[in-house]
Length: 102
Image 1 (cartoon, rainbow, N blue to C red):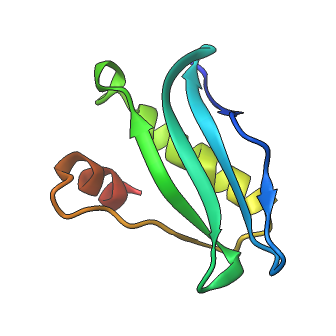
Image 2 (image 1 turned 135 degrees about the horizontal axis):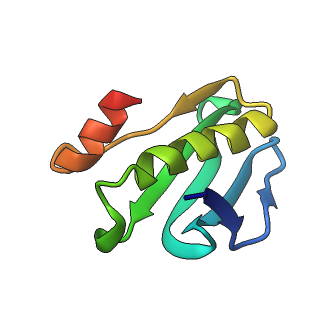
């Protein structure tokens, strides 16, 4: 199984060097979710943020979210980010487990 991020929007740039882009998470070219990446407006363009990560219910608990997060990290490294931040709602038990594992 090959998990990839496929851009769904053009990359956006801000005057202060910020960037943002949305991606489709695909497994063997089949869409299974989405992710939105940005640089952090408060901490500057060297800090990347996974703003949103969603894996469709039928494809959860198979490592798709983990691989998507790792692929997102690679994109952010390509943007020259040296730090990554993500926040997870307290009620999102599965997402909290993923964040703790990473």
